[in-house]
Image 1 (cartoon, rainbow, N blue to C red):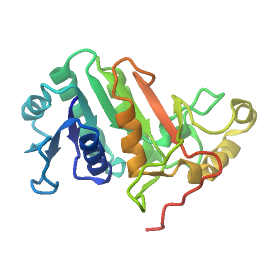
Image 2 (image 1 turned 180 degrees about the horizontal axis):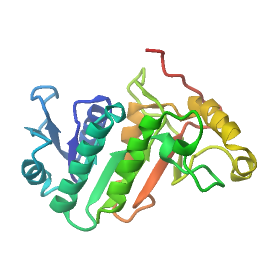
Image 3 (image 1 turned 135 degrees about the horizontal axis):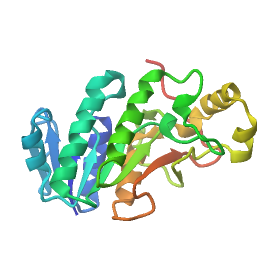
Image 4 (image 1 turned 120 degrees about the vertical axis):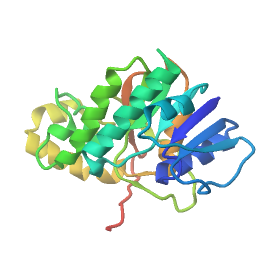
Length: 240
């Protein structure tokens, strides 16, 4: 496939580019600074101003799929403005049914057995509302989109992805619906927090999930995607 990766020099983007090349895809990396990626015969690197809608749309054309790893949720409105422009440009460039992956966060997933998301729970930082804004924007597009919603992400010590990841569509990959239905929201929030060690992924895991599910109209078409570690495995993100 011919893939275009935005945010290709970031933690997630670099792993996506590397894994895509290893799988034999042709990759276009859109970056702000040239020279940040190792050269490859199947890698084209282009410096693009993401704020220039016309230039961005032009750079996205003629690809089989687009993967957005650009932006940081802590940037608030700058983040949602950026992702909104990327969604609009991808929608125009690929047309209806164009394959598109983007990132959200675990708090955006539905709580099993409930009619609300993790963002609605007490104690969850309100900056994650930005993910809901981006979700609303991509739902309004004509794209065949999927939104990866991981917990914290860290470097893999050996550079390899995890085997046996647990995937879910639309809701948390952990906790039984019967349990969350019976718990008050505060207790559900605490259960969510205690689940973080099983929701902590390697950047390589994110790349694997996305590249394993590039097909159109697949299992995760127009859905949020949850990811958890296999049972018994736990990780902790180092304190800053």
